[in-house]
Image 1 (tube, one colour):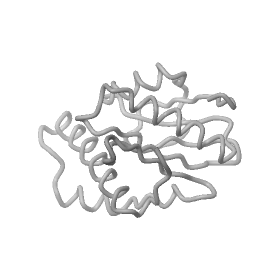
Image 2 (tube, rainbow, N blue to C red):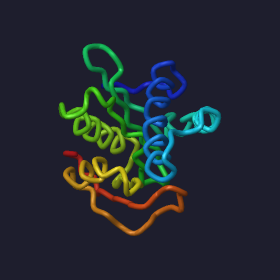
Image 3 (tube, rainbow, N blue to C red):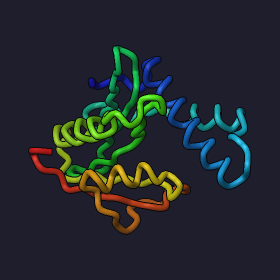
Image 4 (cartoon, rainbow, N blue to C red):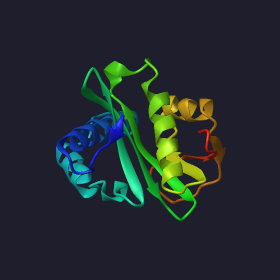
Length: 162
C-alpha cells in the first residue's frame, strides 16, 4: 500500500469503479435503473480528488498481486480532524481483509497529517461499509456535514498505535 497522486491513471480508474458502484447501487435501489451514463461522467469529472494532496491529504492505493485493488483517502478538515473518503475495495477482492488493512493505513496516514480523529459519512444502503467501520472502532455520531446522500456519520479517535 502506498500514496498515489490523485490524478494518476490508477487513481482515476479506482475512482471510476468506486463511483460507478455506489451511484448504480443508489439508482437501482431508488429508481430501478443504473446511473445515466452522462450523469455518471459529469459526476466523476466534477470530483478530481485534489483534496488528497499533501500537506493536507493523501490517497492510498492497495495492490493485490501488483494490480490496483482498492483505495482510501484522507483529507484534513482542520488541524486535528481528518475525513475518511473513497474507501473502496474491488468487488472481486472483498472478503480477504483488504478493507481492514486500508483503514489501518489510512489511520496511520491521518496521524501523520496531524489528525487526532477521523470522521466519515456514508449511506444507509451501504450496510457493509457501516459494519466495517463499526468493527474497527468508528462510533456513529450526529451529522458533521450536510452532504446530500449522507445518512450515517462516524467518528474515531486516533492513537499513535492506530
